[in-house]
Length: 145
Figure 1: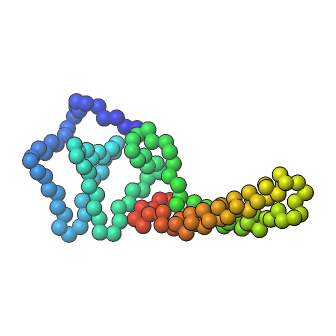
Figure 2 (figure 1 turned 90 degrees about the vertical axis):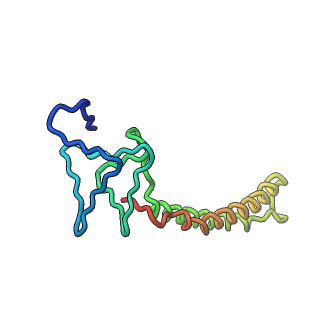
Figure 3 (figure 1 turned 120 degrees about the vertical axis):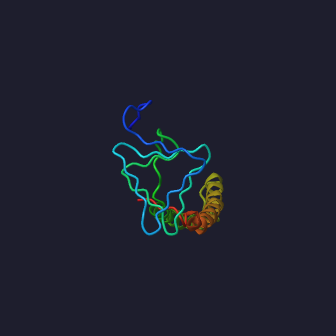
């Protein structure tokens, strides 16, 4: 990480005013630097665009320079979680069909089988509810690669 030295010794331009506007009426504004381009504010930094804001770099740190938690690829994660939930629904559906009836060799086994049937219904219902809400957890504005 580049750390600038202060005070700077060399050629520089300082523009100081109560408000500063840079306006390109027909094309673009480009800022280039060999080491770094820094934007800083005591309140907010706003990036507004009509179609997209693109940050293209091999490493993006959000929150701090020490950020080390990775972002989940949402669509891939949701697809894999849907597959898992569908398997869980299938398994729990089979559990709901477990019945002790008069064939349980012991009362303990009969009680366990009844518990599995009730448990299967609960897991099935909760998995189905989660599956139905899953697509709503994906952002409609933020995308990552």
